[in-house]
Image (cartoon, rainbow, N blue to C red; front, side, top):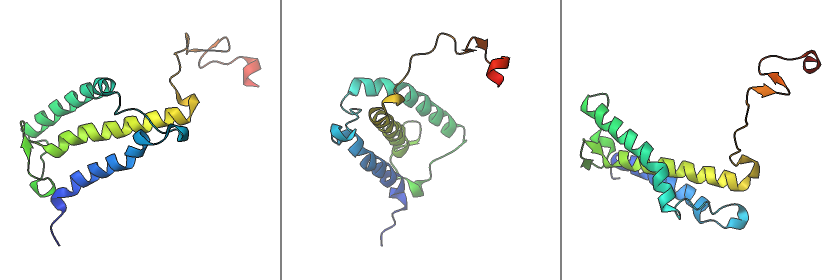
Length: 138
């Protein structure tokens, strides 16, 4: 049997995409059809800041010996900064799977949509948060 250790990372990422793909491609009548991949500009705006921060962090941590990528568990393709290609794919696949899940939950549960912030989150029934009146305490 061939040694599959070096493919585990890519296999797991592929399974993440495969498992969440129905959330994008599934029928809208079942609450699916999240439309994450179908809105590329919005997707890039959501991914780019996080991707950039974590890529810079990984390059820094790898350069300073905080961590490394074992060649036994990666396919061996290294990118500038000595990053394993699997690591960069991770920073795309995992957030996209998270966005697909979030958008699907929003479609299935109308109450899960973002609500506008309240004018005064500290005020509850005419009292300041953390204090209660005699009427509220009973």
